[in-house]
Image (cartoon, rainbow, N blue to C red):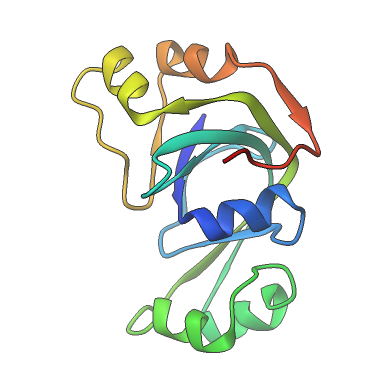
Amino acid sequence: MLFLSIHPEFVLAIVEGKKTVELRKRRPSAELGSIVAIYATTPRCEVVATATLSRVDFDAPEVLWRRVRNSASVTKAQYDSYYMNSDLAVGLHLDNVLVLNRPILLAELRSEWKQFQPPQQFRYLDSNQQRLIQSQSSTPGLALRG
């Protein structure tokens, strides 16, 4: 399972179905069809949803922009700023977004996973960590609470 740290405004766009591509500077080695845990960064600091990784698209930033500009929910200026001085742009295509019925707070993650720090980009969860995420039932189409 891939664990993605995402700014809350982009998490909201993902759960609302407006953002179907999450942008990264590094290509993860996750298999297509694998589950992705979506962690909303500060000020929320909680896992709020899961999704399925349906495709990993990568190219030079200027080339990838033409393919993802309508599904990444960022402006061209934001995109260019993010990929400044980067040779590689990665688009993680997310499907089947499910909002957790109860978000998993950072304090709970740290209680269960000793010395846990949310990643800047992404990290991989081991089977024990995956169980915590999967223990929360989730529902499609729910709005984020609070």
